[in-house]
Image (cartoon, rainbow, N blue to C red):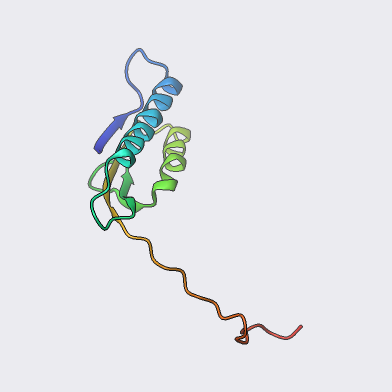
Length: 108
């Protein structure tokens, strides 16, 4: 999804437009996560960008998008650009912690 959302359409309530935009973004993410995973892939990950325009959009984490949208709405920005692209995700094994090994903590 690469889209510029207008938050001030003529004749519509700004709050309802904001809710509709958030719903559309969540719906897209859910739809992408339902797609069948290719062989060797653990989950769907997302590359995200957010900004006022496509030229100034910066890389952000997926979980930060709703907060950024709320920030634009609070500042009464007229529009914003969001880019969410699905990619293959591979889980990494957590490092094993040896119970008998000394820890690097300072004495009390």
